[in-house]
Length: 277
Picture 1 (tube, rainbow, N blue to C red):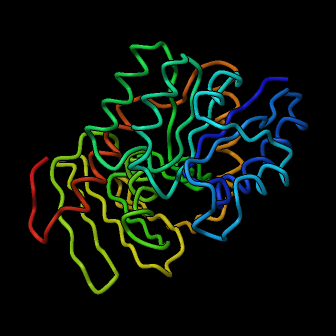
Picture 2 (cartoon, one colour; picture 1 turned 180 degrees about the horizontal axis):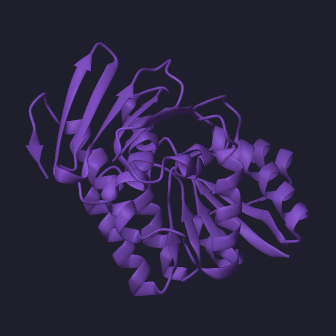
């Protein structure tokens, strides 16, 4: 049985609470032999529900490690979580990637482009394959939007800072990495983010805490379609993570991850005037 090690800011959070069952289900279905065996959390008590790391590990049948280094040494592959604290990812990666093991890093990969570039440089230095994405990249609805020129996405969540990555990931999957300019408008907690792709097209991401995820795409012929994002994209993400652990391969380029991080950083800082990238 291959051992997955969890590295987190604190262990009882939505992603860590759901990933173990999904990984078990997919392994049982596809005949894979992975289990979450080891875990470490930087702080002992969850900021979400007050559950301790010890309680989380006991409930999930996972061995709690005293240090991140212990998780890295004992595990065959690694999963860096801290989905609400991407500012921690570079700090964790500086230790974890030294072990040269395949490592998935949860969304948001990094809070800025510079951190993302440093993580990939560390991965290259230590020969550690690295993979990160928003689960929304794997929304089945995007498969129906091939050839899109102009895109509108919607989505919600606790804050634009934490959740806009999902919409940006969808936009980059559909329109690519070569964005030219950005601008943004605030309406209370709402945000309207614009991305210009020059002659290729454009995208608008609309954020409101209560909005569901959706995507609308217009093709070169002017025809458009709208899809509510209701597919089981998180389980698809788990399949992709396990495939990555098996093969070391990722089904999209590193350049797309860097483009997502650059767009996120620039959009969150943008004003209501076009700013060139």
